[in-house]
Amino acid sequence: MGKSPKESSSRTLMSYLLEGLMIFAAVSLSFIAEEFREKLQEKKRENKFMKSIVEDLDRDIVTLSDMAETNRKKYIPSGDSISMFLADYDSEKQELRQ
Image 1 (cartoon, rainbow, N blue to C red):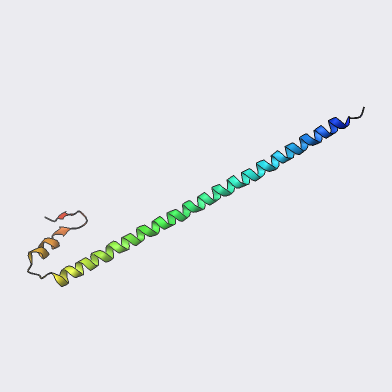
Image 2 (image 1 turned 45 degrees about the vertical axis):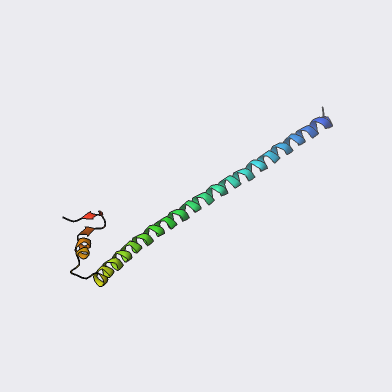
């Protein structure tokens, strides 16, 4: 009651196909996991850069405000009406102070 050579080779072929399919699935899943990991790292890097840009802009705003105030005092005579207007101007609200 032995197996015929055809049955034996067909089972071997099926086992090879199954093994090949499992290897393909494992490699595909590893590529998908690596892609996911890279996207997470890119997102963290993007957030870090965005925070850096916001901090730089905040520092630039302070620096420019200081420079503008210095230039107002330096270049606009104190008796000039524009200096009084600028002194009453609230740059954050973009309106005149009452």
